[in-house]
Length: 502
Image 1 (spheres, rainbow, N blue to C red):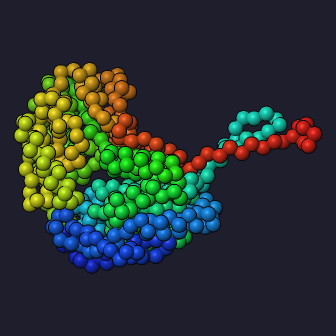
Image 2 (cartoon, one colour):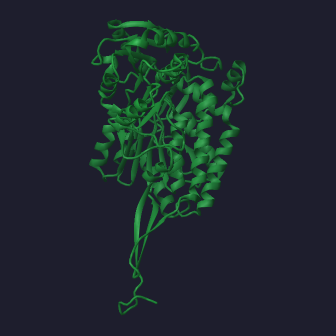
């Protein structure tokens, strides 16, 4: 565990950190060409943190041009693998030195508990960069079988200029998930953070330059989706887009690609993830702890949140009692207090959206929570509904609301679990090993955990089925595939007369 500071120390640090405000393009901070800015707000207090460059299509074009020039001249794409590795390792080291500042910025900008920032987000982001850095000089190309007269080489090459579009729920961690493999592959990057959470991306860009990343390789263009995201998606000189966010916005990027240069698009989108608990599940107290972690970590603002509890009837009463007991162990309050586990929702608009869903909870039985606090926080809410067709069971709420559906059998549980447009993650709790493996095989999700909640780790691919996304995977060696092209080099070994050379 990282060395946590006290609440007073975090609050003092929050007052002393210089907040970045300009976009970072071609190795330097630059205002938007229009001169426009937007206000970034602390969602826990509603108080403005500062002004950030409100970039537009002209800024996107400038950043893409600089990224293309940097890619074509080979200052990064043709750098020796060991040299690229050294730069990324230096970046990870600088981030580690500035971890408290990064954690505070992340908490201030997003409402995330400082405890999560310090113990999960920042350490995992640093580990992600180190992991991909170490992989750079360990991925081998191939030689395919061929006749004695030929040699066939299969080589990876960086795809070129990539646009990376980040969500607001894990700003720094998602940045690492994307720039780690993209930079490791030798690509140039134009990165758009969510307008709600731009600050840590700007700080990392500055640290990357300090670590030795050449100008033009990592550019951060701040602004809204229509003003920055769409021009990036439509730009004819962007070779691929990797997007994490809502399914609705993901659809737009497919249209942008189709309307422009048919750039590659990788989508990681929403989820309505089932957590199945069967009657034979062991240690219900442990099960309840996993359910609470899965549903309420990061205030439920998590695409892989275990938001649907599908529980067999025989174990439901005891499990719900234990879940309620564990929820009480998650204090809600000031995100900069390291004892707090439930922080503020990311924005007033998102708070209003989640609060509206709480009205639908009145159709069911609310076992815990169901209220809002101070117009910024939503209580962890446990609500039982009678039908899997209910809006709370169908739509991604993206807040701390766990719906409970009672079932009578394993088969019914699997049927309801798969009855969704999404397929990102799923969990199953059972003491029956054969049933656990059967369930894991037939659940339609990219990650299935057995007797736990989790997302794997950096070495396991992360992504979904159906409307949760497609085109590639984050994490693991497979993440590098989306940022590279495969090229076949076919060599003729015959002499001029067509005979094989001895």
